[in-house]
Length: 267
Image (cartoon, rainbow, N blue to C red; front, side, top):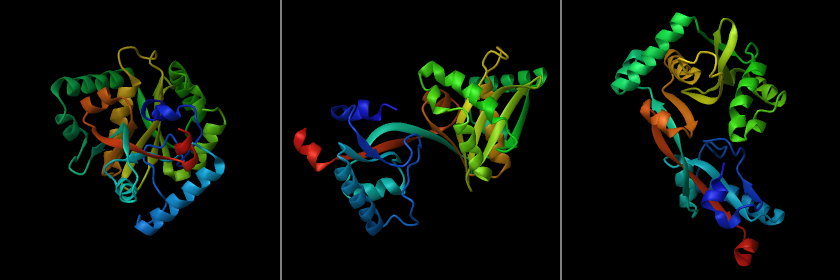
């Protein structure tokens, strides 16, 4: 994700000890309350482990710059470095899809409505599936083809990825788009109590050249979030041009890294 390369270049290529899932855009310490005692114990043990392992850096990446963990780490004396942005929509004052579209600039709104009209005319069918019924093998093929353009197809390991998603059970759902029965778009959503997370997507952009399955997926996911009564639609990081044009708001994402004592002296 280039966090080390771009923001901590002195440690590029070095070993680091970092939070649980590098690709997660909402890092968290698993505790009900992030009080000083809890955070202090976690940080002390991470520091000790980092020194035992002999790594150069330890800490957390992808911390919400407006959240409680950010405040707790700052209070503990760590310094956050902005490394990215995440994007979301607050749906608490959005009653339906038309109300949401009305908030967008006219050209963006008209484009989405045109895409939706073409999709209806061509017979594209959207459906929400649970992970046991969804075509996850089809998703992996689409996702790998798209990720290969960026050298990241390995994130979607056939067999392993599908098993991981199925193991999430009710916490994940899948939006599928089909044209004449063929899967042309698929998005995996993480279903939290008040938030629907648009996690990963795969699309066949050649299936219907007049429109993008990605844009149709956005509309379908937004409708699912509204229908299911979510107060937030979270759309992760990157692709800022699309997300800001379509009404998503950015939040800063920070990294908190500290060098181990050994590497502080060496460097």
